[in-house]
Image (tube, rainbow, N blue to C red; front, top):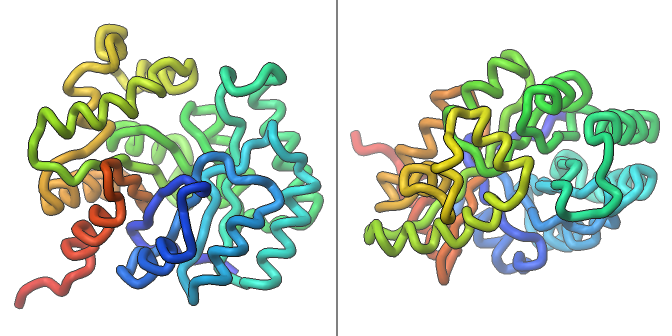
Length: 278
């Protein structure tokens, strides 16, 4: 059973997502809820949110391959999917080298892990892979339903679509700040971006995308921060989100920064899902 995600979903750390927040995301009309922050491979937190909602698909973005064995994740997948058929999309990924001393041979590890999930009966159409560079994007296209890139721009979306081809799912994350004060928005965005600019896989991906070393210095250039963290009015942000769709994305998961992310969800939903005037 192929899980339908719609064009826009919400991305939020699993540890910060209560059943009440999940219910609000569903009520607002978003097509999916993505749970980041490396949720545990027992998938208990995902199961609780599925129990609390009626129909919204929930995806992991992502279960870290270094943290949980493929056999553990596969058993958890079957338990959750049997309880909530057609609502759980398993996202897995290799993480980044700085997160574990065991990090080695990333592509080989990814392929071995995906093979183990396949052998354990996890259907490819309900599996996605965190992917940035061309080799991992190609692996996502060949071995899973598609790719879930994180911290990218529409330029990367266009490049990724060229790598994976027309059919696989392409579901990038896009961070936003519903804030019209540009300097305040940049301050919030740079605080988030600067953490990722210390990680080699994100730096390398941005350099491949065409950014320069000066763009990646001192917390990120204004232009880089503005593209990685969209800011402005809800209407302006939605225009930016739609650029991913124009570049080849099937679905965009929206991560909202600021003191009250749920306020951002409501403001964006009003623009995204309100009927167009006749």
